[in-house]
Image 1 (tube, rainbow over the protein chains, first blue to last red):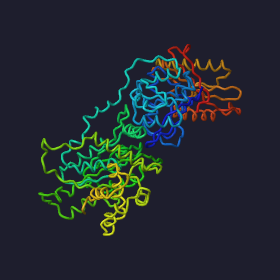
Image 2: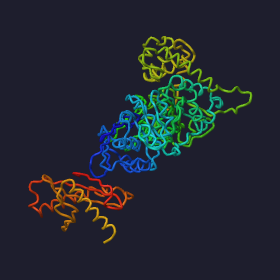
Image 3: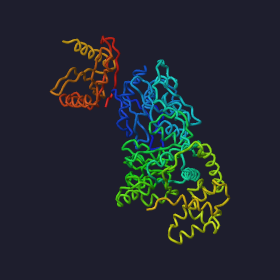
Length: 508
Length: 120
């Protein structure tokens, strides 16, 4: 046989495209070339495949081999095509089961000794293969657990190339080699942070529960030491566990970032980029392989921007579009990559550069302009998307043994789950799941609109001009979450009052 | 003559015998011009074949045919046309073709012979 085919997967952002790898053997002087828009790493597959085949006891045919990666116009990058190229090339001469070779997707890098080396992005690649109807995949041994997270595929975690060839029916001896290890998985998370570690700050804990229950974006402002970071870090713990789809998304993003993924984590992720982060590191990018940024890794979880006032305004404003659409589209020469970006945003900021503005018993040394400029970084359009603005103060009473401890994470999670269920029940048939998704008109005029009596403080504030109509909607949104947490069938006056308190926020 | 040249000559001899057994007539051997040398020029009724013969003792340093790379092929074509220009009588409307013969083995008489026709 002079033409052999097999499958591989090219990753474009979080999506994979199945690539057909065909190898043609022509009666010409020995040569080996790869066509179909390979990048540098993929072009170098020639050398790796050549030596790996030789050292696996499967020398490549001594004629001209042309390997085409089709669709040829799709840019391809990385070393994950090595195995597919080697198998297709060998299948032009070595007797193998052509049907088996053609129906299998191969993902993995080859070492010169013929062993398969792990590559990033195996999970999204296998998902793409599965969507394309492929039922058998070959992955490096170190990525096998990750590939098995996808149901309905037969996964071969191969140690070396000879083993793959043998699997396709080639008559070759499989050397006894140690598999190439993957990156060790991070140690299991230390004791998850518990909400009851937080001393005092009862309103803040309540606000956090409201944010979790309604999926509301949140801004915390307060002096250093008020516990903003402590609070934010405990948010993932009170969010409900991820469902299958969400857990796969989270694992895919981890895989694309090169982190080891051996099991599906049901805990919502928390991404906390440093305030020196660039736009590209936040939204994703890269000139060749497009890598996911912090917002993609925070998808289905929490994006926590500590010291939000220190972030460049351009970086913060880059969040506006993904906040609206739930996904981020990155354009580069010749490719467009889409990543999921369904994250809950938590911003924390000091009230001013020195942190003491408006704090009792402390004196702020910042000039007024500096304070305005500091909070001005958070642009109006960004603040518009934030439902809860919380002012924190320092705890002024030391905890005593007699003081009751706060709510535990477990109790909070139960309340959140119950409230979310109630919201989902109320919103059934509408396509929205969380209160934060619901548009204002539906809240004001929909079947669950509050009574005029309950709305009175809002109407008054609107009339006075101290609340915009958009702010009005946001208070209503938070109020419906508060009502859900209370188990109330509709929004009452009290809920509106508490929501107004959560909205009070910054006084600039 | 160095050992490798002896082997090379023996390889060319073997290749010539092989081509004669396949019905080709040897027209020229080791034809030189200022650009280089052609190992063998053979012909049958319809084709004129310029043959590059490469002999190696073993394939420890790669297959002999691997040495016939793109640069060498371009040079061989130039030489082939130079030969045609120098021997207008021999052409007789024949097609011109470039072949490569690789021989692997310590003894040219028993070496493994690999014949590639019409290389491009």
